[in-house]
Image 1: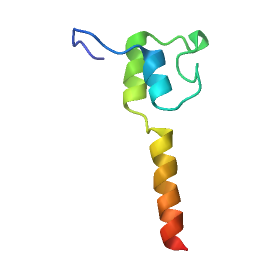
Image 2: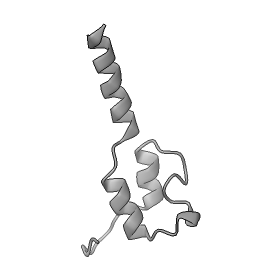
Image 3: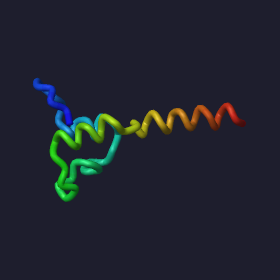
Length: 62
């Protein structure tokens, strides 16, 4: 849990920024608080970075 006060980005913005589909983590059916969503998103791997790294590895392996 993060008890830091002050402005924080909206979970939907962070989800978009990471290149995830809308609702991937922020869908209300997941029953997560905003704090839980931000924590999970903050601990996640940015898919676009992972794709870039894999492409680089594949290119060097050939």
